[in-house]
Image 1: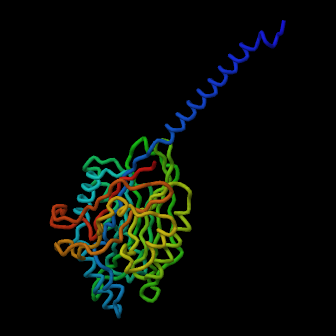
Image 2: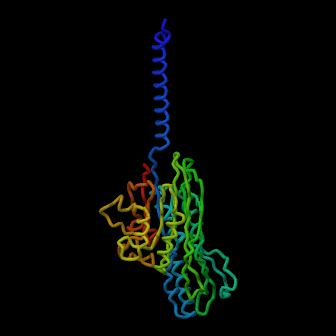
Image 3: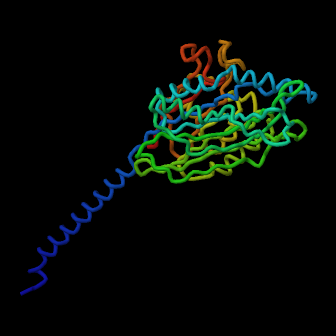
Length: 358
């Protein structure tokens, strides 16, 4: 009897069963992989909150007495622009857009000291904390958000009044807010400052800029969100900071979302910072979602009580790299119906975007 012939059918059957099993395992593995790589939808917003006053008169003052008078006027303007009221409008915007992440610029902190000691000792009495007011406004609407990181940058203190009666201290900060959701797992939070700075008042004040980033995971997909605010007082500093951004916090293979006020106009009439970031691989969410619309985000006047004219520039961005695509986008804070207590929410509009990671 030929044993090989006798067992041939059984061998073939076993081989067929093995092949079917391998195919089944492959299908199961592929299905599992597809589940892990399911498309991710993400909502984000960038929001410049406005210091409450234009600092140009202070920065360009020709004498100390002129600077002290400008500080007094600027502090009065900050109070008139009433951030506690404006924070309620910002919270309303967040409630409507429901972003998963919000990048804030000019998340200001004001501290005062009376009487003035001409900045011999730093002012410590908190007069206005934007982060605290935002937390209160969000909580009042039962919106569950928390700050992942707040980065203090420029810290300047000057006497106010002529003669001075008090010292006013401004700390300019960036902040990254996240919606509290068990699906959003934060893996890492980091903050930093750019090495490029800008001296003001002959070096008496150093303007600093920086960033906040978070690596997060939703549904097995890990990505990075960065918020930043680049220099406005010096174009060369701004361009250098943009290069630091691309080579530093944005240097990752992770899908990346960049939120911020870059102070670089989208029409190319200003600095090349936006173009440099696009050359580094970023894509601009606004024209991707609205190719036929300009999408202006700036600016209302210094006095937010005045209606003013229409926006005239686009300097606020959601930029995307390594996979994210913009499905939709919108601008808030530009129509009179969005005013609160007779005030615009900010001098900038806010930009939100709905993103897809395929």
